[in-house]
Amino acid sequence: MLDEDMNITTSETDIYRMLLKNSCTLSNDLLELQQIEYEQCIILAEIDRIDAEKQRLKYLLDLLQSTKSNGRKKSQKHQLKRINSNPKSD
Image (cartoon, rainbow, N blue to C red; front, side, top):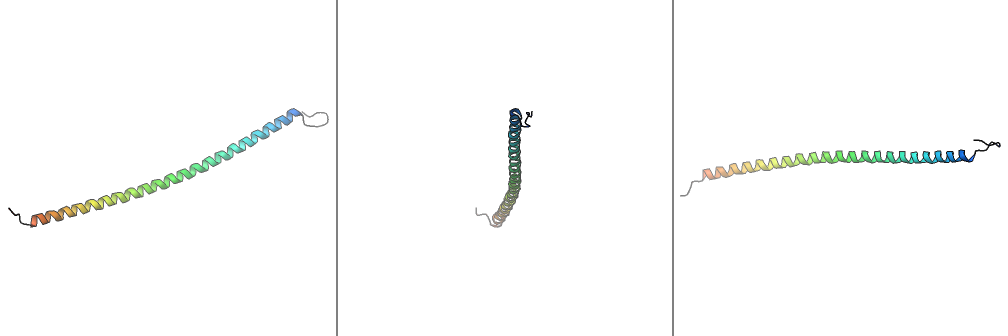
């Protein structure tokens, strides 16, 4: 592929250009893959954070409903005591 004057031939230059282009394309593809992987990590971390917040809110809701339910039971017991302690007027 070298001519008599030790110069690179046209076909070798074309091959070199093709290899350089392919190398740049591969490099760009690798950078794009790294960017995608990084974004996936961010998304997964955000999903974990949202899931933890969801669990915390569910716990608070359960606690609130439990407190509300206990309040109703106490209120109903108090009303029954009042009804039972008042004489019936017939």
